[in-house]
Length: 73
View 1 (cartoon, helix red, strand yellow):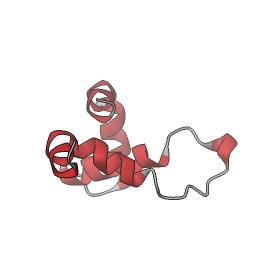
View 2 (cartoon, rainbow, N blue to C red):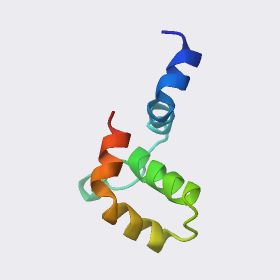
View 3 (cartoon, rainbow, N blue to C red):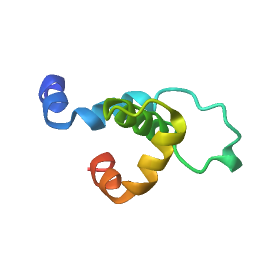
View 4 (tube, helix red, strand yellow):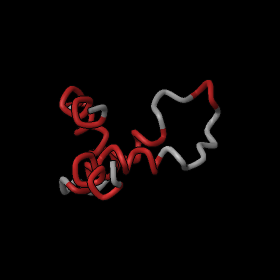
């Protein structure tokens, strides 16, 4: 499939694949979430108009099931 079509049909996954390329320097045994997922949550929160990380975390917790559907499709 052509990359442009893939972007148009699944832009979130293409973005996630790009974010997965970022090195994660956190201690492996302490990682609860993938770094790419954290970046996507912050991006979604900012695009939703949320201005600080505490409110993004609250929003993500409240919308957990909806977010899982979008992030993993």
